[in-house]
Image 1: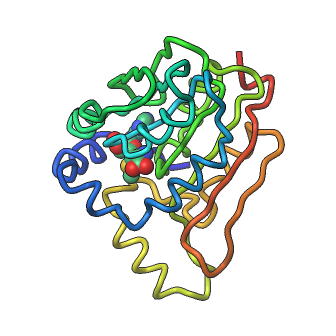
Image 2: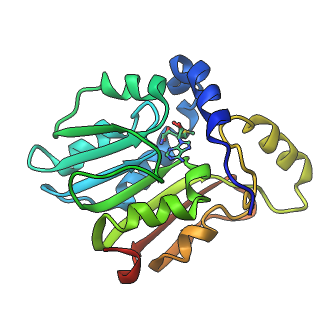
Length: 209
Ligand SMILES: C[S@@+](CC[C@H](N)C(=O)[O-])C[C@H]1O[C@@H](n2cnc3c(N)ncnc32)[C@H](O)[C@@H]1O
């Protein structure tokens, strides 16, 4: 498997950060749908993995409320600075780190992967995170995937428009494949005519601590 290129990602997000929320406004609805799929309850700890500018953070915070907690991390200082400026209804802890190296202060009950293709293809990242959550923690992931193979022109466009957001296109036809290996009750909602997916499951006992 090819490796994601972190240096390339950091360079891309350094320039993109001020425009990121506007550029990605078309995915707000599916991000919200994925947050809803986590079925968060008041008082829970939720992790936003690769949180970027933190669009999801206030929504996650509303779901866990003031007795809950949102943990979020991202390696891009420019993206994280925007996340840091958000106000939210629950305590927030932000970490500047990759998924491979982050150390969480509390075990999470639920994890969100929202448009984190590179991280979803890092076994080291997934394993580091899943060692630090409650066994059976709920997971929801969303992002872009290729259309069916015969929609080649649309797929050409997807690859071109996602260069920079994604540094490793391996698995772009089914980006949930690696994640699925670590989850029980895995389910993915998608189809040949959509570029989106929402995958859910629970962290398998041996993947957690
Ligand atoms: C497309 S953005 C998604 C941001 C946010 N989750 C959202 O829904 O808008 C991808 C983010 O993944 C981060 N990223 C790249 N490699 C990563 C890694 N190895 N671990 C954690 N985050 C990573 C990037 O810095 C970037 O902020």
